[in-house]
Amino acid sequence: MKTAIKTISTILLLGSALSAEGLTLTSNDLHGQISADQVYDGFGCKGNNISPQLSWSGVPKGTKSFAVTIYDPDAPTGSGWWHWVVFDIPKDTVALPANASKDNMPKGAIQSKTDYGNPGFGGACPPMGDKAHRYITTVYALDVEKLGLDANTDSAMAGYTINSHTIEKSSIITYFKR
Image: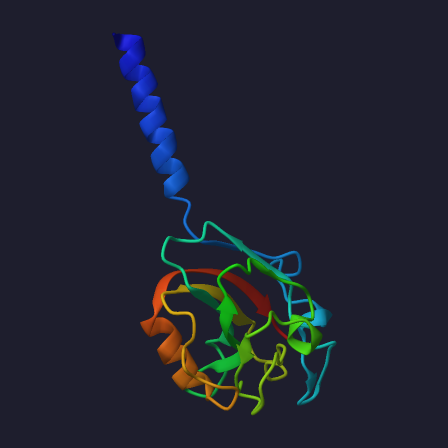
């Protein structure tokens, strides 16, 4: 009887541990510090401006699409800085390759305006001599297939709409100082 109880307890614990994993974002390119590949090429910065490779797993039930954002809350603007805003990513997508922003977005995905003023990825470029900035890369599992927004949508409106349809999200934080 004690063996049966231990076995059942173990199964229940394993089952709850597996289901507790949730949405998990990983990247082959983001490792603590931003590399030159994810640094902007402009505004005094000299980087490669390549969007990072991203993968996600543990997709929650009811997910109908995904969104991805990269946001710097430390930008000296009073409202942070949006570096990448992508939405309407099809639900069967679980990864974006490096440089997807330029030439390899999933069909139907929309990149909207960043704080650089245009759609697409804009890399890190904090002011010279400022403290290290945090870059929060987030994937969102959404409860709708389409947000009803387009590439001209500003980042604040896109962020608001994304958050209002979020089932679950996962983030990676990286840092950069120059």
